[in-house]
Image 1 (cartoon, rainbow, N blue to C red):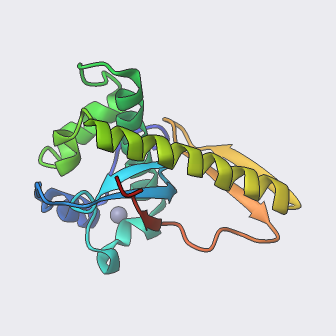
Image 2 (cartoon, rainbow, N blue to C red; image 1 turned 90 degrees about the vertical axis):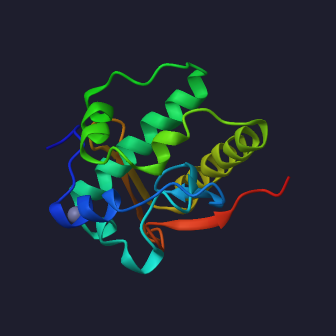
Amino acid sequence: MPGSFTLCPECAAQFQALRFDPKAVVHSVLMPYGSIVWDDELPPMDQRQFLHHKECNFSMIRLMGLRKQLWLSGRKTEPDQEVWQQARALIPNWPGFQRLTLNRQEWESLQFCLEETEELMDDFRQSSSVFSVTDEGGGAASFKAYPKPPAADCQTKPAKPS
Ligand SMILES: [Zn+2]
């Protein structure tokens, strides 16, 4: 369903099993989130089936997007969008729900990530013969770039050191 938060039973079980880790490391995930993500917020790298499930993948992109908007807005109240409510109901213990405000260092990591994402998109625009962005609803977008498609759908790099 476009514009909603849904996970197949398999992915839902994986995300429900995640637990908050105060020592989790923050990463800048340019593709596909354009945001910072802690490593306890996604299943281990080799178990990320949701990346291969279109609806599960877009649901996580929408959720990450709403959280990023919340950070950037500086609001203290949670988003009232349906996607957020659906995620809250489906994966209530998702560690990401415990990170709704950023400390200064995290804020700087996010700013750095946003700049990098912007540069990456500019690169694609300039180096591709065809570049199109498709709105997938609820803040998720997919894009096509030819002749060089993006190599990976979840490219991580360490956050900028403080
Ligand atoms: Zn799935």
